[in-house]
Length: 299
Ligand SMILES: [Zn+2]
Image 1 (cartoon, rainbow, N blue to C red):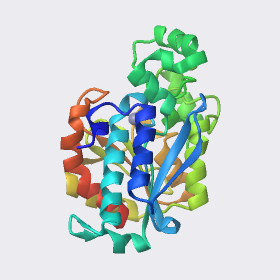
Image 2 (image 1 turned 30 degrees about the horizontal axis):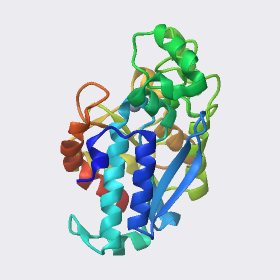
Image 3 (image 1 turned 180 degrees about the vertical axis):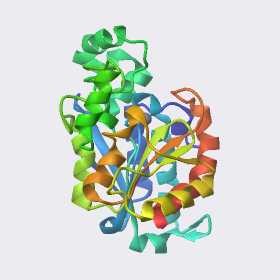
Image 4 (image 1 turned 45 degrees about the vertical axis):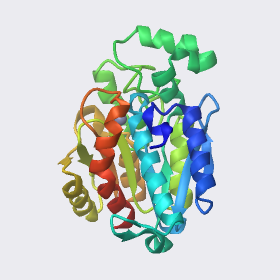
């Protein structure tokens, strides 16, 4: 297997691997969708008919970088089947992707992932800032470099989320669960929102770790088809369907997508254990989720 998948997916290694996938599969697209606060470009890979695409996104949370490895591995395999006109799980990929497409953002939060993998030095001029926030908490760093939790920063029930955060004693930048002063205040959030709007994506799948769970609801705008799709996905991999609760119930990417675009959005919590899940978990998780991810693209 590729060396890339044997180690944690640092930003530079991931970017090199994206370029390699593009080189081996000239028909796919690789393009920046925006930048992180520290100026690292956030990339998307796309394949098939992008006018009728679903979106996969991973590594919103710094410690959840295994979701990036998983999405890279899936995209690489899908692209390989497309280029070489091979079947994948008995699906004719080339034919299927004439109609349907996949846009994949493997690393939404590059600054956070760099802090998780390579330490606070990677935060450059923000190093002292990050270290100061770290000292005030015993929680692991999940946020972007500004101490904003990207999956609390989307425009869905934001006021209610702020109230819940304050009740839990979170009132400013923190390693995890602080949603910022207003929705979409962060560059990374706006980059993801921009892709959804400009491609008018049909569905979104946000990858997190861990728990082996699938979330599919958000309030009154949850489309009727969401539950059926979620059941199909859950059946294929044996993950549990769950409902939102507490601090995880507003401000998330899939919440915003359902609430504002009125289309199905899902959160998939991969794996089981303590974040960060070790890179050795990639193989078993990939085997278990391959069919589910393919279904998510083609149904
Ligand atoms: Zn997460």
